[in-house]
Amino acid sequence: MALIKKPVNGMKDVMPDEMAVRNYVIDMIRKTYAAFGFSSIDTPAVEHIENLLSKQGGDNEKLIFKILKRGEKLHLDTAETEADVTDSGLRYDLTLPLSRYYANHANELPAPFKALQIGPVWRADRPQRGRFRQFTQCDIDILGEGSCLAEIELILATSTALMNMDFSDFTIRINDRRILKDMAKNAGFEEAQYDSVFITLDKMDKIGEDGVKAELTEKFSAELAESFMNVFKEAGPAYDLPLIMSAVDQLKTGDFKIVFDPTLVRGMSYYTGPIFEISMDGFGGSVGGGGRYDGMIGKFTGQETPACGFSIGFERIIMLLMEKGFKVPGSEEKIAFLVEKKMPGERLTEVLAEAQALRAQGKNVSVNIMKKNRKFQKDQLIAEGYTEIKEYFNG
Figure 1 (cartoon, rainbow, N blue to C red):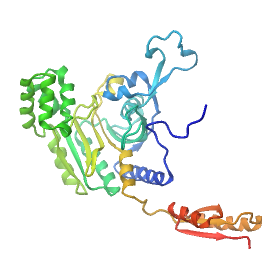
Figure 2: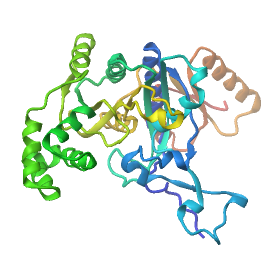
Figure 3: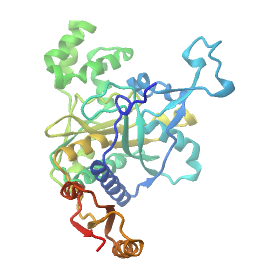
């Protein structure tokens, strides 16, 4: 059987130029969030299947990469359902693992706890521009803080991180799940119908008000659809949203916008209060999002714990930076030594000693054997960011 050199569909190999940008962005994000008091943590890539299927992840629960039981626990010959052969899966986000982490370690952590987590997640999704089956998430969460201070801090920290990456043309859209539920209730829908109503409302940017009204009519009735659209047109910021928006507007250090958007839904069913997304000029999808999820940790502990988080769309940010030719600022000087083949040992040692001395000065030095086509070799090194190329011959 021939081996396959391409990565699995929906996953990708990362080239050195992109890896340099990724490392820079992660370092910058960590530094920015540390300034706001967030502490880095990590959780396993693999989670218990019971947790992943706890009906809190919305459609993501349909996209789990499930893992077979191992060894003597795996009985394929007698298995009747998928549940008989799986006991774990790859995490589809970082919020559920964080909730389990906090439930397990709450007595060892400060209250409130400000967590930063950066790591890969997996979803068996349909790959498209800026969307992969394995991708990195960058999350900040505040656990144990029930006031809107959490939302304000999360929005300020995330917007600061984006501005530190030279993004300014973005808008933070904000809504509240309680407003959505109030709209559905006042329009006459039953609670069991809310999620279906919200799924339709979430399509507003694609199908417009007429499209939403038509779909609600088809799903339910013309009377309910008309009632909902009337309520929707009267919707305005409520609960903590006016305070959150006012505080962010007064405290922000850039010219991004924060606006109320009654069509914002967010797909996760675990959200209980304010929700937010970041949209950026020139890009159709969101580049970040989050919200309050006060009920999730209680699923593990039996006691409700306030929780709120914000996630930067790391892969999409990297894609946008690469597309505009972003170069890592302040990179160390990169020098290449080209050494003639079959150089005597004593001479080679002298060249390597020179490279070591430059490295001790904080410079990056790559020593390479000289190729026949030196011009092509130099062009490649220049493309890799080497600013000085030194040649060493036997003579």
